[in-house]
Image 1 (cartoon, rainbow, N blue to C red):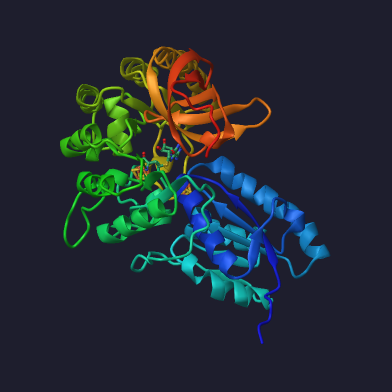
Image 2 (cartoon, helix red, strand yellow; image 1 turned 180 degrees about the vertical axis):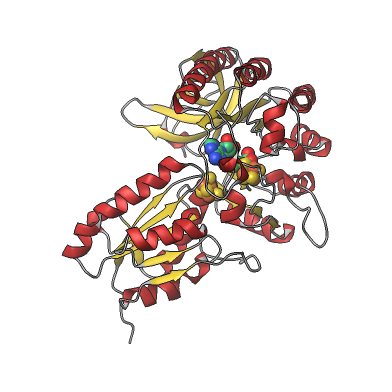
Length: 450
Ligand code: SAH
Ligand code: SF4
Ligand code: F3S
């Protein structure tokens, strides 16, 4: 006799980077196979799961605030399971804090043992408080189920962890050392995705262009791109995040030569001052970065460069800050993620002298954002008049418009019919708005699908 499994519901909140977003897709894949479905509010949930980020202090504070407020839900429904996973649990001090301050949390697991979720959940359901966090990933676990949130675009992990130890950053402590996936496994996964209708993949790694260095048969990221570019059905290949130190010529050349690889490079600079970069342990100087940008622009026409910048790193002088503003102007990033430096316990920078007062950090970030907004507007305006292919991602039934992205990563809105979602269409860019471009469809796309 077949018994129907009772349906259970999960509310999952994801914080942090795309690595966490993808982990959530895996967690949801596992939970779906256990009979769970996702719900949009905590009130409806049998399981509440917070997939956390530790990279800055603010999101961590939010986790404590939110989870404390779930105490009432737990009192009303004692069988509710509340879980925390992700990067916060990987830090010993933070874990102790969670255990102490959030006694109503039933289930804690880390970034290295997501595949253990079925067993952990089973034990948590019987009322036991489950805490299982591994210091380091074992071998990479392949073939976990994935619940993709988007039928057209998919994330694919290529390298886990980070061994760069930038002095401000918690990630090497929460994600472990660099471990590349076997190239064959990546190619197989992407082939299967393409067969399933995925048009665009984003290859993920904290340091994606360090791919392959640690493998028994060393390969590199450029070589991987060549293999993926040959997969039939796949249209676009993106990747993030690239470290300037590992941005070697074969990779730049592969970006230019391979038709599916998009002309967008997220290349975090962090600071425009060589002295600050040295103290950050980034492994390049201001001049190295600018020289690299020159090479990239020479080889890849239409390249769109974006970046991350930390403002107010310990010891940052007004001169260092000006050097960052100068570099931003010089490179002409189309956008940048700008962050106030946030001291992370256990990292060398948190113990450095000359921590910068909050007010100074804020003043500097305002200046930077203002400059970046000006440059963003100019880079977007420069796209007007160009003819680009966009992959149509969605349809707005009220405005009757399509939203898509160019290969070089600009968002474009055009009037057009819904059946073009999932298609690559040619558009002429007609106007630039604050964060999107407007365009018009070229060619005859208005007829209905046969
Ligand atoms: N591996 C990527 C990004 C990792 S985290 C890289 O090296 O580029 C994403 C961004 O968060 C970083 O690029 C950095 O700008 C920012 N960040 C990391 N630690 C931070 C901290 N302690 N304070 C403020 N911003 C931080
Ligand atoms: Fe953090 Fe640096 Fe590694 Fe990026 S490269 S994850 S900033 S340690
Ligand atoms: Fe945050 Fe962990 Fe990503 S600390 S940025 S979720 S790797």
